[in-house]
Image 1 (tube, rainbow, N blue to C red):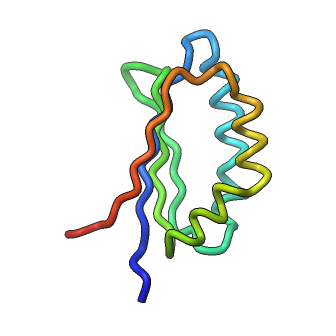
Image 2 (cartoon, rainbow, N blue to C red):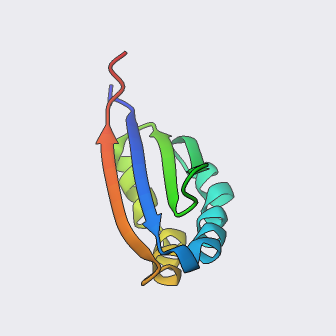
Length: 97
């Protein structure tokens, strides 16, 4: 059996682009939650620093997550937020306890 995949993605945006990026990220939620293999897809915003966003995701497999990453709505979001994101880090993780 393939192990589930947890994704933690941190997105730091320019302070004058918070609303733009937030709007684009929110567009991903419903469509992604309906995708094959998506178990959890939650978007967070930092209480102290609103320029920091975090996705916490759980997927049935790495293959299905990779399929998600190549979908048009993800590409559209990346295009719409180009130049607004200062830093993006993505960790592929396995739950161990």
